[in-house]
Length: 626
Image (cartoon, rainbow, N blue to C red):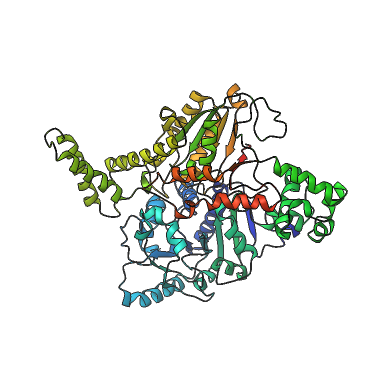
């Protein structure tokens, strides 16, 4: 772990610690909590913890449970206050934060029920103000919060303090931002099911805690974490108000730290190590900053941005520009599987062997087509043996309405010959009954989940086939962590790793494509990648593995930066249209912001601005190195 101890962290206004991964950060914070509990117990005083919900604190809660079970840490004298609760949800609702805390922490430790405090989402509207005032009073009566644990939302919110929340705000009812509701859509099955309001501790309430620790995991949180840590204090990013707290810290994993100046632009905060990768990053950044093609950058512009040493190494900007431009140009290829019988010295992928056995791993159906649909089609058309493996069923993203539609179609079809279709009628009727019994938010029975998975499976198969993949080369793993769990409660197991390993051992591919390495570690993509990593590592030394290259793509996550890209596959207008038609096969679950192809067009425009050839669209990849 590295801390804010040198000029390297000069841009950071909150002391920030970078850990290798989320479990390491969670263990460090849990150890601090343990030490405080032990200290206070000796003094005869309780500890007051402020707790957060969502996927971010889950590794922290699991470490607290481990400390209780394996090291005997008692929480009997601990008092807790949670940040927030959805308004309108009862405490037994499957998505209420009260139930979340019971399932993730409270039911696993010896915390006394009377010491647990959460806002009540069922308080009548005319009683909300009094309820919030009472919550503030309860925190004060307990002696104030000793350590407040925080996550950060994509809008920069802490608790549910959406953009516009003042620094002095107290516990209150407020509307949820559209981005926040979109992020919660998977939990509630549809965006329209997400509550529009929540009760939350205010920013002022949070800032009264003696210690604050904000955690963030995964590359998707990098930009907003950097804004909170390095940007101005502003109501537009409520997490930025931690800058004025006397004892606030940020715990980030490698992915979430990627936008910090010391990570992203190290030459601005100290002497950089001018490796080829760092040189490329710096030159491309300068070109985008100056809004110039790489070949038009001048010595003076390098000097003005702290890169005089880099220019000196190359003699002048001209030679430096040429080298970086050529390297960026060489990432572009129309042959993702390698061009046969060609000089591959400067190409991203090897010419031989040809054809290659290619394995495309999609954590959830739709990840593959969204991230690399054009490349999938290119690999097939160029003669490679392409296999697509969907790691999870994706049923948790399928609404009840889709299952009802299927059941009703089956019932209407069976009306023609009820006796012959007796079994199907029973099945459809059972599905409709299960949906009615569980209600809008109840846990779906196994049979209903299986039907939803089959609906999703059909869409995934149709999409892959439309891109040329042979039906017999489409696999569905149905990893147990997904089929036996639900969002925010997944747990990876040995069976998951075994299932992925079996595919690797059977195919022994020359190329693997996968996403999720920078995702939140508790997300579907993060856990699927962890299963792949373990299966991959278990086969170290096997001849096929030594000849296999792993390429990372971005599924539903934000795109790679230009300096990160090691293979760029251009698409013509017709190829992009064909990809989008494949995406549209997923009628049960769509992401409007990803359906118009603008992300791929934006990447092509970015390459164009750097001075390379102009294309309609580009898909990007990065080599994975263990």
